[in-house]
Length: 258
Ligand code: PGA
Image (cartoon, rainbow, N blue to C red; front, side, top):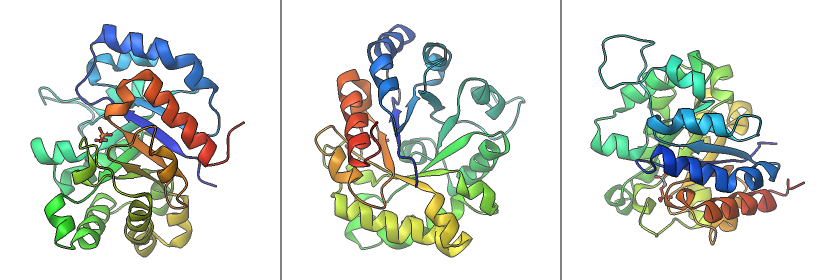
């Protein structure tokens, strides 16, 4: 049984004051929802405040990126040791970082290794853009991203990680994939590639999320799919009532609500 994981990617939203208000608003109810792992991924500047607020709850915290070196003269970067003090998770290779900040497959792989070395759980993002999708290149492209991200990892390392399949055309557009379509890519391409590389047993332990315009209205469509183990939520995670509704739906759909 894979425990579903719902992560809220706040992107570049929320000051410390705003983040504090949002966490206070949803903390108690979020903590009460069982059977689903809940992760908040605020910007670096609010990680410390959010981590403090969720102490003694079951809510986890994730960073949105990090560098791979432990320390050094790397102005503007944040190291795994710094992230580790505050977080259990770290998002790596989000399409916005690949698109706007020069993130490459090779850098993603270095960051994944650094995260695992320090006991952080990486949420590795993969997904094709609209042109690739329309040209029928989804399988080849997504598979190559998975292969690159997992290069040189051990079976033990792969078993614990999370992958998010986020088709770029669905992110922030209000046009999500269909449940069946996402399930197909996640099962055949993402899990299939992990299986090719590390064996089917290992592939069955990896949690694979869907991301891209997830909302309270479509959460159950995704969560009812057998290959989909959670969601990476952007816009809807900024609104307490919406994020709570999504986590509740996920708990109900996966039948682990208690
Ligand atoms: P969205 O973003 O839910 O706003 O589409 C998802 C993401 O980028 O992780």
